[in-house]
Amino acid sequence: MPTLDEQTALDFPGEITIHYDDDSDLGRAGQGLQSFPLMNVALRARKLEYWLMSPAEQVALVFLLEHLRPKVAIEIGTRFGGSLQALAQFCDRVYSIDIDPDVPKRLASKFPNVEFLTGRSDDLLPPLIDRLQCEGTELSFALVDGDHSTDGVRKDLDNLLRFRPTVPLYIVMHDSSNPVCREGLRRAKWAANPCVHAVELDFVPGTVFRGKLWGGLALGILLPHERSGRFEITARSELTLRSLRSQQTLGLLPRAARKVKRMLLGTH
Ligand SMILES: C[S@@+](CC[C@H](N)C(=O)[O-])C[C@H]1O[C@@H](n2cnc3c(N)ncnc32)[C@H](O)[C@@H]1O
Image 1 (cartoon, rainbow, N blue to C red):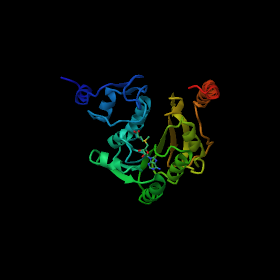
Image 2 (image 1 turned 90 degrees about the vertical axis):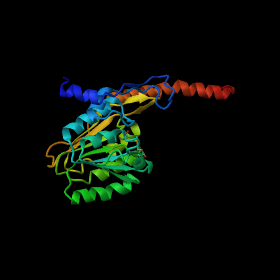
Image 3 (image 1 turned 60 degrees about the horizontal axis):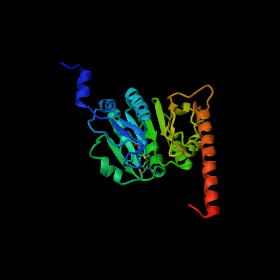
Image 4 (image 1 turned 45 degrees about the vertical axis):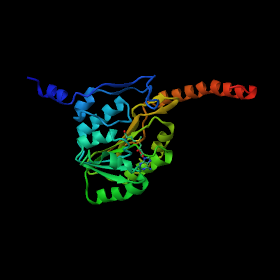
């Protein structure tokens, strides 16, 4: 007789997906491990939606959701539904905001506890936040993974930070290692919300991919009571990321010099 856990693994066996360096899909080549059976067990699904996050980011998100079990969550940026499948599994109700009208067409039938809102997050989020606040909603999770410009990230966060939570609220932001997104994270008005107790930019650090820093999860923790002590944004991988950035710049210099030489010589 299999134990309950063994039975779950049998019910949701999943598979290992790896994108090797010579993968025929050029968009995914070199990404390494993409999915593994334990994630199918955690999400209780035989087939997973394509998830635009690293395995470590996926695990971190699932851990948070599994332990918070949010009544209500908001996701900004859904695309193929990778992160949404985790939110839908562990939250009672999810609001998914995406500018792409194909998102609800792709996913609405699969996730009955998700309300799909189509449009720019900058337009949709303020009225949603105000409504949830008025209704006394127990919002306890938000994932920011939409507009990746500095101003886009900042605006999404500032709109979320209008909220005063009645239960702990965890705000997770993807691509916190990318310099453009990171700047938006730093510019957001965290300190102006007295319920913000911690902001860590490198909860999960990102990696260099195709010459640029991408990925990483930042985490903001809001509690229902006001903070009394010190507040500042922390970034445990700041020095690592800075050193990677300077190495990248150094790596680019010889390439730029070779390009100029080719131009001057008229060769390719
Ligand atoms: C990186 S994808 C999200 C990936 C998804 N969270 C996952 O983990 O698989 C970013 C999504 O944000 C959406 N998006 C970009 N700008 C937006 C905006 N201003 N408002 C709402 N959605 C936006 C895009 O249409 C896209 O689907």
